[in-house]
Image (cartoon, rainbow, N blue to C red; front, side, top):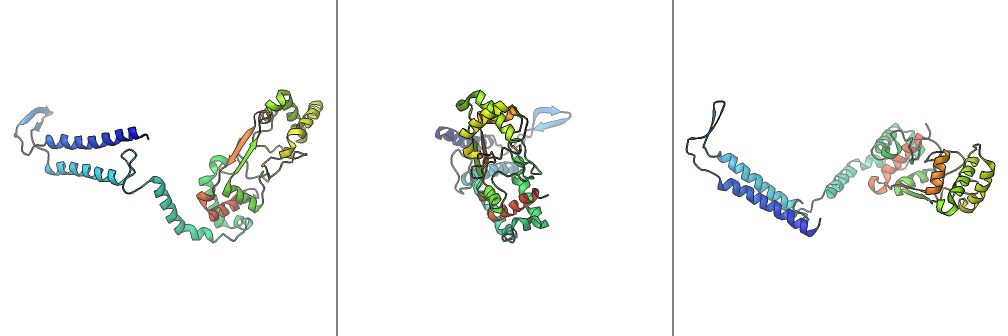
Length: 291
């Protein structure tokens, strides 16, 4: 927050606590008159008696506790507190304790291949829990993906299905970009390339348009997707010949991707999970496509 707003918060908090104390103390009575205040409800009368001593001092203690808390922990504007506590440092400390406690459990699977992990019930259960906590929001509970997110249960993996490929994807993430071509080849060009893509995928098409689309494809698309449209792992370019596509296989959706482009990001989980957990997770994910 800004310095001015921070000062406003600090002043407001301190003055409020001082005001509460003064309101309590200046209105405190040591002795009462013994008479009623005139308030009467259903036979219950309110007498002009002082607050119990214990109640008064408990209230004072709450103010003292609040003051000590705000000195040690953040709560006064931009002042971080003498304890330098943050929710991130607490999370890191909790993670450190958990790693020390559970790290050896994950480490025992370090030297096993992904196929061996996939055949180990304990490793699979661990991998399933890690997957549920980190991956289901995009890939679904069963790893079947959804619009814009790849299906992990088939054998069509853009970045490769080798053990090293899978672990690299999880550890370091992936980033792929499909450039928008409508400004380059125009709407007609987009329709022609769409027709050609449908042709190499085995669909019935307008041959004349597909022929013109091939010329456009050879000029603009082969660098990433290859001359036969089989894709290239190096660029994260998908195979266009099998219709296993993230954004659908209708003419309209293909044309939309070609014309407007797409950007896909798989976040890196290496720092969050660590290599041993990633290794177990990779074994579970590879097992999904083997079921």
